[in-house]
Image (tube, rainbow, N blue to C red; front, side):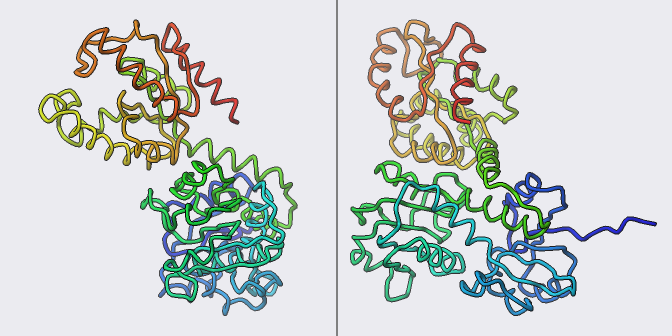
Length: 416
């Protein structure tokens, strides 16, 4: 007798190009999981077709699917939002909300006490409702939802300077619109924790601001993995240990995260990048090469024709492009640290490594800003504190390219 083929599980949403869900579910179970990008006009027919064994549901259908469900879990009913659908033996759709479990897991990972604290939620969509319920259950004494047109909006944030917890549920700062922040964290002087449920980029402008201010913060990737784990249990009836959430989160972060190399001109960034590319199976991007493609001129030509100031402006635009990439090795020009704004562009998806090579070993040929030993020494002394303020790790250059690359890989391994 032929083996009956079960329809796949999958993710229902409108625009799903950059979803990590198939990757996550592949690590959670041995079932087929697909993306089901569906226009609003096709939603009714898709849900009635039941060409799926179960679904995760994302924007903009977390509320739209509710009328199609014959029953809702207590959590989904309480929140008024469904992000997971299973099918009963009677072929009825059952709505659940595993986002709640995912966000509760995220709260448990942030070193913050929620009991009796005031929290503000940016955004009033479906995710906001889940976050509100979870914060309430965590013991927050007051929860304020900030929307564009509601009573509490972005024009009167000063009323909430006493907020201890801030959660962003809006898409502000999400790829491809990187670099934008929904609020200025300086408005909230007693913040104890910041959560941005965005996970691409890994560090939004909001998260980078929190890091700069020393506020404990987290992105939404652990929430995504945790809710997928809970959904997988509902799909298969098989219990999965919570420790797998961290393992999968780490694996995806390692795959997503780029490595940025900074350092003096001639320190070996491009050569080390090529070695790392082969060992880590990540493509190389060189900002000087991107500048050549963008302008048709080398950095040397731009500096000689228009001056260093014009070149730095072009370099910053290229840093913004490169910083949006995930899973790359990015070799940068020696002076990229001279512009403060380049840090946020480079750090959003990357770990930054400073390759520190002895000044006497740095070449001068073809380098318009470091043409002799005296110039190199002066430049090194000026830039050294900048390299160190930008980097996550400082790597002393070895006698060979491979030895330098191995030192970097050792530091990288310590993060995993």
